[in-house]
Structure formats: structure tokens, C-alpha cells
Image 1: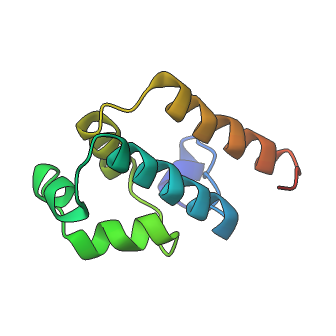
Image 2 (image 1 turned 180 degrees about the horizontal axis):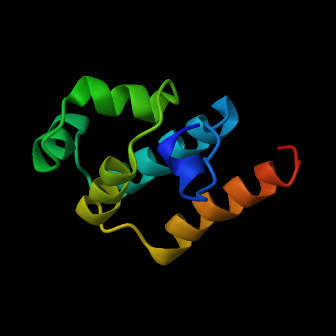
Length: 97
């Protein structure tokens, strides 16, 4: 049994490929909106531009910390953040594209 299960915490399922792609697109939109290159954003959040490229393509999901770093660095709007949450809720409830 994992530590999370021992303490009554539910494990969050891995993100689906569709959700990873959606998050990547939204994070790129945030970056593009303020005119940052991937390299500039990577420097601001102390990450590699190749890591950001993988996230923006939907190849990998960002950690929660990196996700928040990107949102703060790009001054993401509430509507952008909510669109990501709504998409996740829709997919988890069995919704399709």
C-alpha cells in the first residue's frame, strides 16, 4: 500500500494524452500572449526550454510546481486557468472532445 493510500488519500490518475495536449496548448497561449519565447520563459522559471517544448506538445505533463510557475510567470488570466479545470472535469466525467 502506498503512503497516500495508508493515510486515506486518493491517488490522482495520470493525465490523459488529450488533457496533456490541452494543457500544453493553453500554456503556450499564455506564453505567446505576453510575447515570451520558450527560452525566455524557461530562464524565468529555471527550467530547460526542451522541457517546456515537451509540455507544450503534450508529450509530458508539468509537475504542479512547474504548472504554477508557468501560470504566474505568464500572468495567466482566471479564464485561462478555469478553462483547464473545466476541460479536466469534462474528461474525467467521461466527456469527449
